[in-house]
Length: 71
Image (cartoon, rainbow, N blue to C red; front, side):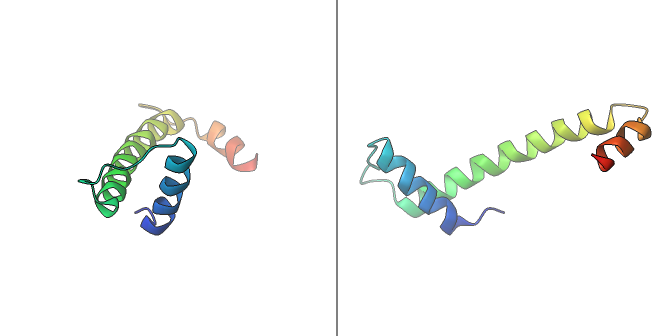
């Protein structure tokens, strides 16, 4: 779960830099919540993909994993 206060500060900064104004009919809290959900959904998919790459789709190369741990 993302820290919504941190995300709100991030969005405030990035929206200001990009000179983007939030429409009046969109509440900032709702925008932050929607953005957090979007990032969390994407993050979960990214984790699943990296899990498959790290552990493989069948046989796990434990020697490779040990090398990664030592690195």
